[in-house]
Amino acid sequence: MTRAWILPMLFVFCGSVVAAGLISRGSPGTATALLLVFVLLAGMNSPLIFPRSIGALEAQRRSAADGRPVVFWRPGCKYCMRLRFRLGRSARRLHWVDIWRDPAGAAAVRAANDGNETVPTVVVAGRPHTNPDPEWVREQLSPSE
Image (cartoon, rainbow, N blue to C red):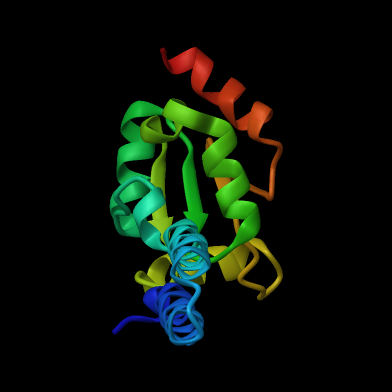
């Protein structure tokens, strides 16, 4: 199991334990509702809500060809989720790199952030921007439409 799935699986496990306890006490409705909340939390903290990740080298190559920004992210990061949700459908047009899956991506983020793996780091035209405003990122996509 990769590191990206530890938190989502922990949410599902804890939700299951709590739900089993509630069912044994005679509250199946509450157990179902609570388990649903835990499953939703697991989904929000999983890599599933993000567009398919590619390697940092491939993302940089594609960005050089099409001019689209590269987003370095990691699962479970609330700022990455904020960026993803606020971008909506536009998020598919970016090149996403999961730094937990790609060592070259993690190294690129550390180089841009004084040795820290601070995400999201968005690279536009070769310049890194740490935790930028989602509206600004959307504006960076406009010229390439």
